[in-house]
Length: 364
Image 1: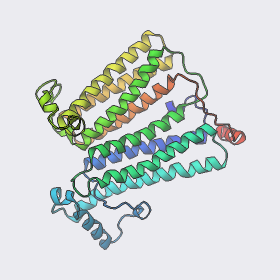
Image 2: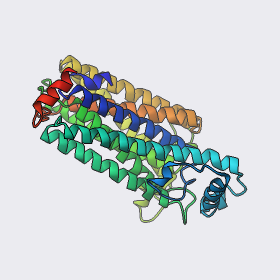
Image 3: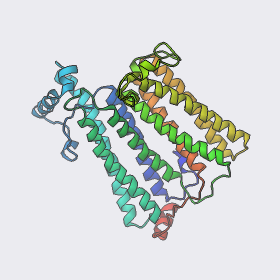
Image 4: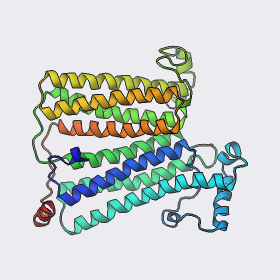
């Protein structure tokens, strides 16, 4: 997070708080990925925001939790005959994921209220942080909305809801990183096209993250495990890509189409990132802009290579989680580069409404 801190005018305590929350969210995303890969996400069939903090503590409570799992289609169709020890394994993954979500909520809200009470936040910063808090509250509801999709008629959660859940988590993460970086300094001088391509890279990164979640939700990484060909060709036949009706369902439900979309977006990101880096060098942009562009292009290149390796090995959990972790790194670099090239002056005023307190915190 050292790069995130550079040039920030936020009070030191606020910076460390936000950096800590962003780190927890990144860990949360990886735990969520592991939960999906281990098919653990439906092991807890109730949403108890408060009492659910405690896991089963007695044999009777474990038996009750297991009995609840036995009532859903996933157990009957995929895990019939599972014993209690096997159930406990998937239960602990989902419980840890939910507990981490609660921890993030507390780690965000309590310091936020304290900073508000001490007058350490300017008006605009408060608005930003309230919006992020609202998104976090929404994320909890979206998480249960996702789980609920797999409790009655499906043996797994909806890939659309899974993708929404992931992208919302990463949107919150990106908003925190952007807030950490925003300051009252002027942005480095740069050509308009560099600013446009930096924002385009950030937008396409989110699209790619959404497509990656669809791939995970459909287990599409475990089929069509060849590269550069897919289904025997560089570009699959239209009949295979668009056989579902209406046509738009293929974009979200057709395993071949979803994996093909993910590949094509990876190529587009790679090409745009290289173009952005070359353009920054040729335009003799500021050193920070050039370095940011080169690092982003390098990360996207590495991510593409790791994605290919993961695909060829049929998405084992270790490679899949490494691919997801590197995706978070790519997103971080894309946010930093887009913020660095933002066209306007930052408008955070951390001293407004609490100058003395903010000054003390900055120096402390």
